[in-house]
Length: 256
Image (tube, rainbow, N blue to C red; front, side, top):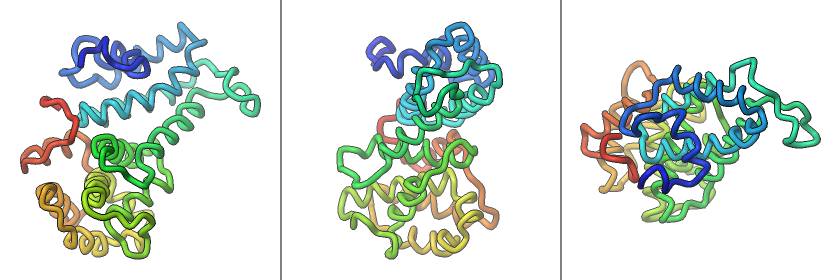
């Protein structure tokens, strides 16, 4: 798909993050500066940028998963910029809202909509990408929602947290999302919710997974969780590690 064929919510951000080619990972600082300068020059567009940006982030997590951390870090730099224009045409209950406030509302809705169950079989690509975006956003201190954490627990198959009782292909998709979340955000979950996500409990759940088509993903996740010191892997490390064991993100471009 060429840039001209992308939805407007995505294509409008390509010049800021991919000024030359999408095969080149975005430069965090330069991308942030370009978008900040644009918002200052065109303050009337701040509201639409804040609401559309999460759609672009999910696009990157889908087709360029290894770039996910870069676009999230650049986005964080943007919304933390104190000189950004205020948004006064959003909601009467929130006059003079900040770009950060509006962005976070939109990001929460975008991620939750993509990750909330019940999962459908045709949602494998979007659900996997949303799991990566959710895990890395939570690890980087950008977003955390009950839906993200709850989906992780259900994907692991915790008996006391089953809501949708997934079976077959959709159970495999849920397990895929849980593995991605474990790779990208396990340490913070264990630290903040030590009883709910005890390391041994997570490992037991991973050992009980029986999905041959994602066995490489499961084994890679187990080896990561088994480490003495837990850590959250950056998106490029996740993609590279999984590539080395023969597993690729569905929908990812070859170079990403």
